[in-house]
Image (cartoon, rainbow, N blue to C red; front, side):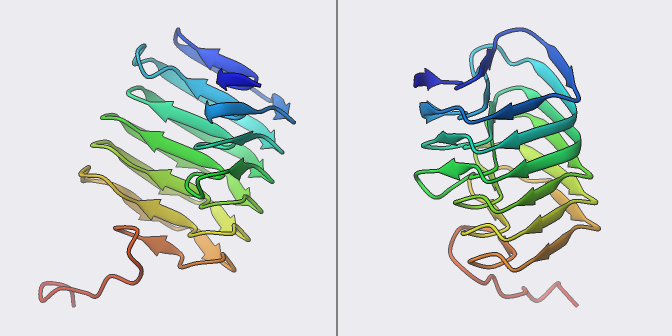
Length: 173
């Protein structure tokens, strides 16, 4: 196993269309793919299949300090041994997008957002993950979760502070 990026460690802007990345492992981050935290790249994945990859965080894919766009495809059966980001881990200070992806059956949360960045997740099916469907930690603001189908995860659908149910405040009606 590699330290980071079991199949790929991306140092330059990369576009991947229609690939299957499976059965890889990394000791730390990005069992399938690591978008290198020192490179701050823009990486685009279309109709990507990530399955059966393992890492401490970001079992399927780990993106840090760069813009990540995933459109279509599946992220399933990946494992984050820390329990966060079984499918996708988005960290750092950038804004990224996941649209029209099935994220299911991962060990850990389906998506974990941490750091100061934000994530727009729309039209995804997020189901059957052992942790939360989406876990949002860190200090980033501006994440949007629209028109997703989130159900049958081991913990709650969307956990905004990794602390369980967040009650509405006085301004939410």
